[in-house]
Length: 148
Image (spheres, helix red, strand yellow):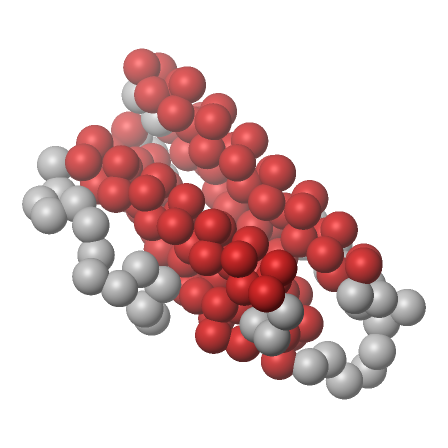
């Protein structure tokens, strides 16, 4: 089913799927250390990444590309030990996902793929801004979401 050489659009989708797999894992860590008052936000964000992951799997399958499975585990970029570091991890997750989806926007040739990528990029930028607000970061937005 998978071709040995993926086109730029398909490779970008594979990379975005890998970012979504990592996001789902990362939000498990966020949930473990997050302020209990943020439980609803963490659950909603996790569900959003699961839904995006599943839609990306479907898109790759429709394009006759075998979607990569999630890794057995992931390494978080810094120790998460309390609600502050959990919120910082959520910001990092959303930043990483935005980078992946921006790449899809730049490489997509199919209008449906580009539209889904813009939606995914926008959603991750909004989640990231909300987490920055929770941390008291000002301004909570970034000029170009997904800019590495």
